[in-house]
Amino acid sequence: MIKRLVILYLLGIFTVPISAQDFQIKSMDDILLNGKGDSSVELGLNTFMYMVLANHPVAKQADLLTEQARQEIRMARGAFDPKIESAWNIKDFKDTDYYNIFNATLKIPTWFPIDPKISVDQNRGVFLDPENSIPSADDFRQISTGVSLPIGRGLFIDQRRADVKQARLFARINDAERIKVINKLLLEAAKEYWNWYFAYYNFRVIESSLEISEEIFDRVKIDFEFGEAAVVDTVQAAITLQNRRIDRTTAFMEFQNAGLILSNFLWGENEEPLELADYHLPAYNDLFDILSNEDPVLDTLLLQAMSQHPELQKLNLKLDQLEVGLKLARENLKPRLNVNYDFINSPLGPDGGLRDLQFGQNYKFGLDFSFPLFLRKERAKVAQSKLKISETSFERDLKELEILNGIEGAYYALDNSKQMLELTDLAVGNYQLLLEAELFNLEVGDSDLFKINFQQDKLLESQVKLLKLKAEVEKAKALLFWSAGIPYLNFEQPQ
Image (tube, rainbow, N blue to C red; front, side):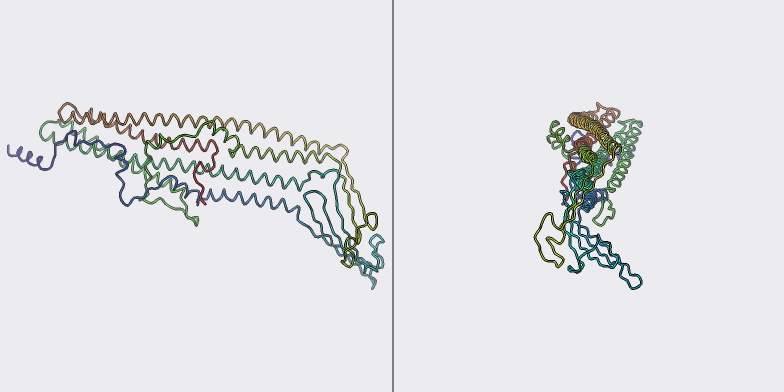
């Protein structure tokens, strides 16, 4: 009798009867918004993406593509650099000046194939070839100015002009490749961010469920002390509590692992790897914001992908490059006929003074002609160019179909995920009401642990599912932008 009174006294001091008001089942917003400490710092998706774009090695590597393309253009333009050529040959034998021949030529290539050139010759010697003889009155010096013009092959396009055009197209191909590489990086980063988001808030939900299990376990112990609960009820409540603690530990470990994976995308300005700090926590995205945000119009995405998708841009530009090659191959079917005309000692004289141009006097003229009789090499080159164009056209058509189908699939997946998210949110509210009702029935003696555990499990399952669907909706949104080839997946590019 005395022992029973002592127990009743202690229970009256250290326990409070649990009622419907005592078992406050927190809403998702209460669980997720009010559990962060004062020292925590929210790491939002936009901030995270900014850090990835600014310093990630893959992003910096992609930026090198622009410089590579610039150097390709620079190298192709090198074919139009002015060129100086010179030669000096001397023969002196037995105190006899056989010949002393000097020539220096400046050639200035131009886009339109009229290439000006200026030559300076200074020749003397006893046994000089008459062709190279220069009057002594001009101090054996002669200046020639003229042009070289292809009037057959090379008039409309030649190798050097084709190289420049293809280099410019290559620069645009590299720009598209850069967007492709960066988009892929941001897609992977976004997926890992939302995995980290789910891992953290999943831990928070399980922790909240653990608190409920602890309250229920304390209540069952009290009931057992008063003889109102069987020993099996205490065992069942203890098992449920143990399972919740295991789930909490597992969820915390998964959150830590998700943070480590996310750290792979964080780099400093000096290319040093960074680690996600313990005080960094994902920003909570409200369900209303997710559902109220308007999705991009499908037709707009399809049209934008047709003109701006990096993969299609690359193939279209590759076709343009092949068209340049085909035009050059067709140009090579023409005979080579080059005309050379040089004025001698005009408009510059041997003394460097200006003189009048006089056609038909004091000049050098020449024609260069060549033409392969069968043109087998040239005709094969044309045929090969056409085959490559056809091959690339087929590849582009197939890629276009794959991209358009991928956009539609990602669009409908996002739409379905948002519908499931809305329904799951309603289910969470209903399960919450059911658990509150069972807890109230427990207070009045009309329920048991089996029903309570069942409803608690269902509530936890629906809350976790709701969190996962939130993350899946955001992943689906990123996948949709990636499928449509939207640059930077609609995130702002760091300046």
